[in-house]
Length: 283
Image 1 (tube, rainbow, N blue to C red):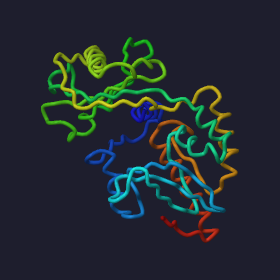
Image 2: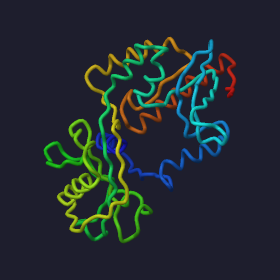
Image 3: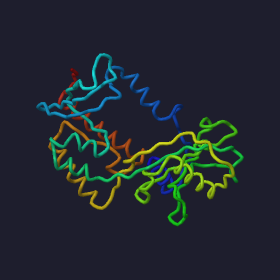
Image 4: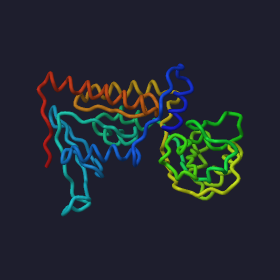
C-alpha cells in the first residue's frame, strides 16, 4: 500500500527538481527502535491495549505485557493520561471505542480493508533484458498482469543487494484480487515471477528472500466513506481526551500519514499549553 501510494503521488506530482529516495539502514523498523531506545521507560513496545476507560477528564489505557519479567499473560497494567492517541487500524480503534462511542465505533468497523501479499525476489543482475533504473512500476488496467506493481529495491538503494544481484518486491491482492489471501506461498511466488518475466524479461528462476501477507492491508475509501468519517468525527467530539489518526482518513500515502500525525500532535500540544496538562502515571 505504501508503494502504490508513493508511485501514484510521484506520477501525479508536478515536475520539479529530482529527489533521491531515502531509506534507513535496517529498514523503517530501525526508526521505531531508535525512538524506543531514546524514550526509554516512556515507551512500551509489544503490548496490547485491551480496554479504554474514562477517568474524569483523563483516560486510562488497560493493557497486557507478557514480555515483562515476572508478569503473566493474564495480568493487566494501566496508564492514566490526559490524552490518548489511537494510531491503529480503523477496526482496532473501533474495538476499543465500542463501549464509549458506539456509533463512531460502528463507523470505524465499517471501513473495508483488502488483503495484500508481498514477495521479495532476487535475480542475477544480468538476468533482466535492461538495466533497472528507477523506482519500479504499477501495472496498467489492461496489462494482463496479476501483480499490482513492483518496487526495484536494489535500483533505489544499492545496499539492498550484492553487486551481482537485483532485489525486486512484487505486490499482489487488493480489491480486485481477494483470492490472493487463500493462495499458498509457492503459488504467490510463481505468479510474481511469471509477471516479472513478461515485464522485465528475466530468464532465470528467482531466489525468494522474504514474503509477507496482510489480510487487512489497505483501507478502502469507498462509497459512503465521507459519511463514515462524519459519524466518527461526531463521536470523537465527545471524547476530547482522545484522538484518532491513521491511513483510513485520506489514504495510505506515507506523507499524508505523517502530515496527519503532525497536525494531531500540534493540536494536542496547544491544548496542553492552554490547560497546563502534565504527563501520565502508570500502575
